[in-house]
Length: 455
Image (cartoon, rainbow, N blue to C red; front, side):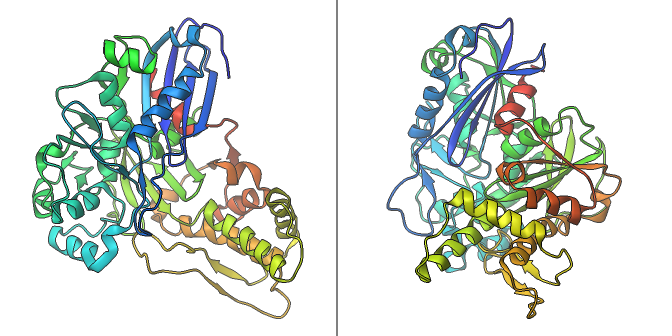
């Protein structure tokens, strides 16, 4: 989308799992001036089934392409840059911030082979380490002497972009991304040094951590030339996409009085806690306390069972149609039919679905199940309704009751929330709260731009 020149804009960039997005935010008018996104196509082909890797150079090239698609006059008025992206993943770079490895993403499961992750948890005493977490991946690489000798930094992909823009002597990460790697203490606000040592991760690879929403440096002349943005403007330390999405989704609401629910490929239910809160219930395998801008914490239940589980069901129905020699509806039509059937189904059918089609990070072996099947309730509509309810209930039941208490609404984002009336009804039914749908798109990029407005 094109935009004319504005007096002052903030740029937000999101490097996601499947696409790169950019948003220009007019902080004075409090509106989106322009946005654009494109699939990055960076997945590394022909990797083993337990590997999830993306070409870091292709990801950075996709950022340059999406920025070039924004109006040049508008880009010239950018006064600050916020960056966000997919959490948990890790890429190794040299001292000049040239990638030495692919981005090993949050979907990578190599650490599960041979019981490596179980041993790592026992050695470090950190039971919440999961496959795909940066420190688990680094420990796996270290155990196989697979860290290049010239490696100078281990970074998230969004940290790498910030480093390319600002060229610091030592790269930085913010506490939201540091916490996503698994060996960071959000209460003490520092790396868990002894656990890092037990994981055999070279400490010098870990970036310096600073508070969420703070400045990492200024765009250098080289960074400006590479990415087509003004030199000298501040760049925010990259924030995690979960926190960035919460920030934009709850804009106009008191974030401490609402719950933020996102249904993308996976799903997250987040409750921002007041500054200074000392949680009464410790984090567990089912939820965690993540750093949040403003020196706060957000209690977050993150599940692999989100929009991907809904798509799996639709794909299964289409496959059954083909097995019967029938022509399956197009996916959009199929979802529309499933929504109508689900909305018409009895909300007290007795069917219950546990939605763990892809397992869970804390328990990769857990699988989905259906209970309560009777002669009268085993219909497509009842099944799809029970699946939608199960996805929301799975998130709700993971958070402590204290984090849910006193909330006035659920702010919902993600395509599954926007496009599926059945999911909207499930949220209100299961959570017992009104749903407020976000109107915008590219919530993570927008949140990064909004945060950058304070720089």
